[in-house]
Length: 440
Image 1 (cartoon, rainbow, N blue to C red):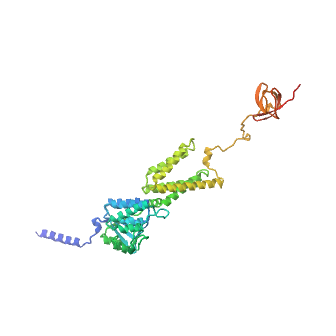
Image 2: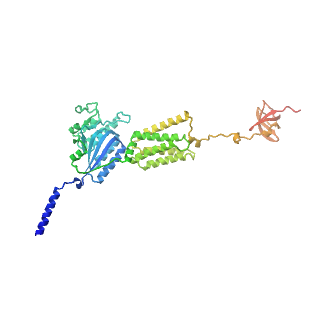
Image 3: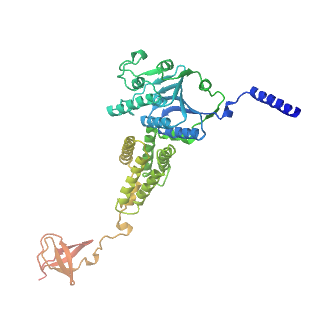
């Protein structure tokens, strides 16, 4: 009995000591993912955020905090990101650490909760084109609906989301009377229930969410994803296409394969690399580009032009296959082609350069007697011989010398048939004769 009492006593003491130990929430398996959304929103960002969401889901994360500080970006990229966020079962929280404007506001509204730092802003989500002009009515209508749906995702009043995108919505209380877009401060966002609270930093947010001791995992953007985000910017890939085509064109004016050719090929490969990493295309577009390039090179060795035409079509198709927006791609290609044509004209007309490609297609060398080429054999041995005019010479006709019929031209004027003639010159195939007076 004594032994049982001792064991029971030690068990109670041990249990009490365990209760006194600090509780580590990470031991409960609490995992928080922190994912930054910075700079411009573009298609490359979608690939990174997709990887982040999949990683969080695979590791059973309790919440994903997206730390946002962006001026906005491409609408189509934002819409794809919004669908990604609303489709995950993991809780999503937007932590607006400074600003979430335009596409950034739309992305924030697609999350379950929104928190902002003091002095943060959210809004100004008008849709504009690449020239900075307001988009057409059709595009605006689509964007208004998307903003409204994003707000309703977490039961937020959609009027404020519409006011962020549509300047015709009148909200003078928040400085967004007609003609102005709504941009909410952190205090205003809390007031209209667009934000759940205001925090000073990430640690305070974790404390407020109930994860002060959670295993916080930050998913950084890889170098490949940084390059992809940079390259998939419409302005950047337009420059890459222009540099690529221009480099290949300038290489045609240079002997061998040099700097221009290397620069051109590198630019085009960078274009495909960025779109591959961003997940916008597969290897099929790169393979199609290589096939097109091979067909154009094959055209140098065969005739007909069919291989060259098919190669050009394959290369253009590969660009459109890799692009996420065919309109932007069409504009980019058009600009690249125009610049290449202008530079080619400048090289030919101003600097007198010649395309080496034409050397394979056009005969440029000449033949002459100094090089040993003879187009027609000169009949110099006929000079001084006498024959008869077989036909009338006016001034050309036919003569007979030693039973050989020859085409001839009179030195002077008319020579009658049967007249005696003498060869005075032989210029190639041209035989010149002179009439001999009657011997009688």
